[in-house]
Image (cartoon, rainbow, N blue to C red; front, side):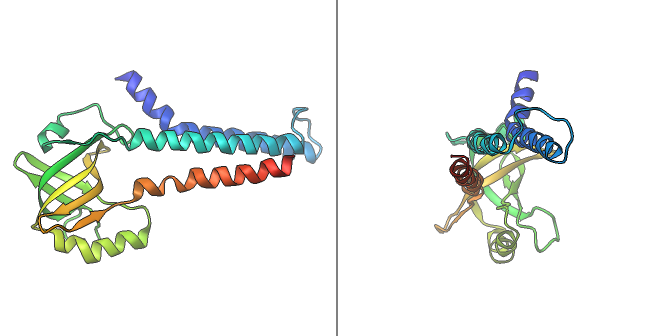
Length: 207
């Protein structure tokens, strides 16, 4: 368990740790500019190079983090199969496909809840649809969730454990053929692309 916990912590925090290290070197460089004693290699040219390389490292680590958090290999599961698996976390997931009925909103009585409660013949499960963009979540909660309540669905997603177990949605399919896709995984690739773009620009400045 401890090795899995440490792996999860490393995967989750490494991009942030690299960014903090870059900030630390930058603060040292600023101190040098205003006359404080600092490390001799912290000059403007080296700081630009550090940020260029560092942003590429952050980008690659972010891609690895996303691939670790959103694994493929979806298999049919029952709710009881998932909740009895304790080797999961918000980072470590089980790709799963479940079939059953949407029985209500994730937060009962809250009209703007984009999340749902799902039930199969073995138990209940919280379904997390969170896209990551507030307006998209609100539109889904207002237009789609109420139509799904009471319907039999097939949900493909990633089973995780936070304070309580839940499935993060990839796709929801209804019996009448309607398909609702969640692109939260794909949205996470925006940040590595941004890191690579800024890194290229900094390399250009450094040359």
